[in-house]
Length: 57
Image (cartoon, rainbow, N blue to C red; front, side, top):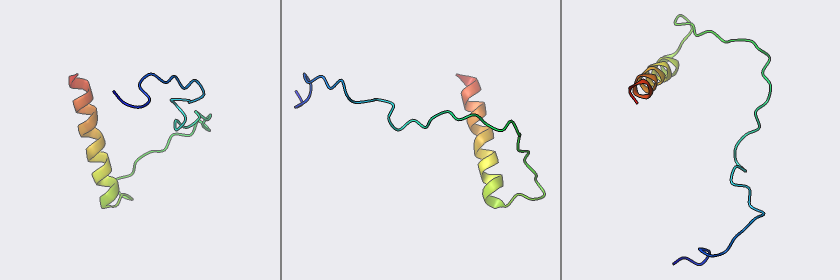
């Protein structure tokens, strides 16, 4: 048993590090292959792979 297993801390906020959902300006940002550098292309590839994995579930 840990020290705080039976201690109830009601003042702690479990979502304290969650950023506030701020309203956006409604402007969509488009991805341009012509202006993309290698980091952008790598991030796009990782995003597409993550989307495929999420769809399998």
